[in-house]
Image (tube, rainbow, N blue to C red; front, side, top):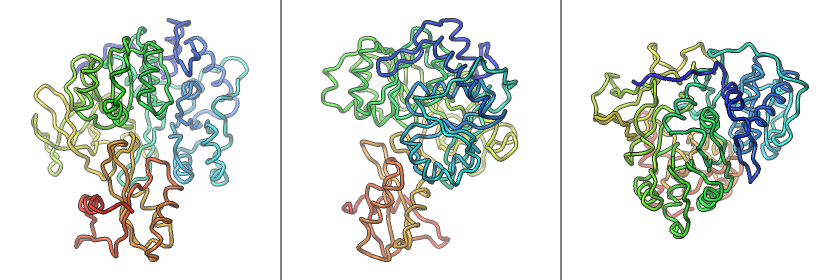
Length: 497
């Protein structure tokens, strides 16, 4: 296990203050052609932090929608500078899930875009703790500089929401040290520095990319266009040196017939994360642009990154070795004995970026007594220490890098009085990685199309049911368990409804 050679600040917002002091005029964020330098970004954080101190009390939670907009960076760091906890909210959530995460986090203020504000209005009367909603793009300014918040490395900086085995999001408590350490770990693992121009081609603004770039004093370019080829053209125009994207987007890019017509001379690396990148796509892109294509691994509980493949000499199919200061081991799923290299078992992680615990419990909630985190992922480690992921223990899957819990979709299905029983399964999809399929027992046999349409209207796109079939009954084993894989195969062999 490599040690951390860094001098780290005590709070996450001090990463930004340090970058602003070192290179004030250097571009920090480029959005739709508009540049925001480090000094200006830091000043905006100061101003909004002062406004938050006027509007909230010490320890309050500020929910911030992670839209791909510079104001996410401002609000995220301002909450930390004000001595508040920032809760990172997926901007694509629909009303019921939005209600759940804001209630769970106890948000006093929500910073959202216009689309999320409209959905929030529908459940606002069920959020008594939420005192104020502020709009991204029109953040209020405070008078003067914010007061010293008095928070330190061990205090909770961030609530990151994730899905558990039941499919309902849990709130992960990340300390300032967790986040600051991981920012430095990522910057080192990805070879980021002041010359880096990182293109973020992602549907949301992930704190991982925000904080690692700030820690390195790098420039971030935000690309909201979903089309991979557009992102590549943007990378060429802005002189991007590294392209961050999703596996499903990179796979589509690799298959694009116009790929050979685009040249990006500045590009040095392509990075993928969130789910597995097909080996063929990685090889195609690497050969086309003569650059390494690498991926990594992590969880909300680990701030998030724990593994990164070598960005100069990646091994396609692997998520790489642990980042600095991080341990990884494989344990037997049943006996929990530590397994040797090459054996498949559950992945366990330990390091300074591992969470303090889940919200609602004391420090260590969700961890083994000795600090190990059981991930729920099955993998193996080769003789060189590289991790290869094999499968998941749980039934959740990812669509466009968003975690989909079948129980979430099932819950909405079963709210319809025409549905007597339902099971949601994972279906492979070349465009999105995976999508939801449903097997439904109906009280009104002709209602399947209307039921699916109603469910999809109540859910974000990545949870939409893309294929469905009606059954007379859902087959279950003697102990009542559902064999989702067999049902998924049955659905795949059925003509789409």
